[in-house]
Every structure is written in structure tokens, then in C-alpha cells.
Length: 167
Image (cartoon, rainbow, N blue to C red; front, side, top):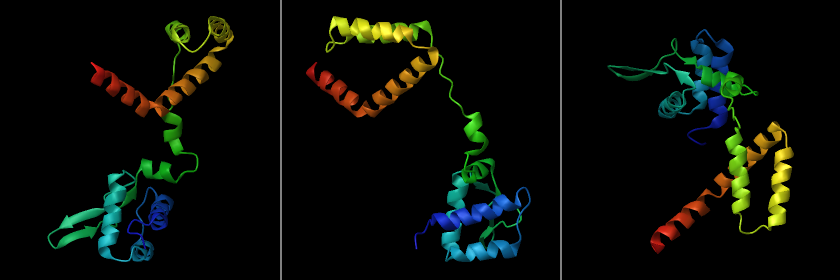
């Protein structure tokens, strides 16, 4: 058995989710806790889930060692969003807005014009097509280009290193 068994972690989170905002009973937790196999593995998983912000108040450190804080153990907003198929409120609240300004379009045109691999005719055709695109299409294109650039980031670093060594 894997020390960090995802299905057992999910079962624990689901119990806490179902009980939220209240705590859960000793009996309900005992059945899930037994599935972790040992107290050490249970503590490791509680610490792991708490480090990821999915639960809180999981362990109390008392004089005779660590103890599971059953009455205080609660799922967090991130734990709830993790269990939700739709991504929860994080999917709604963490929307990235990209605003395109005239400078963005001008910069795209400059990049096209600076291309050494395209003919002047191809460059002019591409720029005229770009100018006809609606804002949403330009936004989509910009996002795709950014993704392509990020996918090739290791190549860019390699080219920069080569250029620096040539100096």
C-alpha cells in the first residue's frame, strides 16, 4: 500500500466535506483512520493534507506526543474546491483576464515583419488577416502564441546560453 493513498485521502476529505461546517464523530473517523494502516502513516497524511491547505487543525502536540484533533479537524475551502467536480469557487474567482491593447496588435505585426522565413507577400497577407480578426480571436491567438512560446522555453534558454558563450 502506498503511504499516501489517494483513495483513502479522498475518503477522509469526503467525510469532512459531508460534515462541514461541523466536526465528525470519533466512530466515523475511526473507520477511515484504520484504512491508513498505522498511526505514523495517518499522521503523515494529515500533515500532508494540511500542508496543501485541504484540512486544518488536524494534529495537537501534547506532552505525550502528537494526537489527532478530532473535534477541531475540518475541511478548508480549498479542500471543498478540490472535491468539487467543477473546481468550486476557485474556478470562478481565479479567472485570468487578458486585455489586448493597440500596442499588442502593433507588436504582433512587428514580429511578423521581422520574420526572416516569410516572404513580404506572406507577411502582408498575414497582417491584413490579423487586422480583420475580432478582439476575441486576437485574444485566443495571443494565448495560443504564449502557450507555444512557453512550450519552447527550454529552447530559448539554450539559445541564450549559446549566444552568451559566443561573446
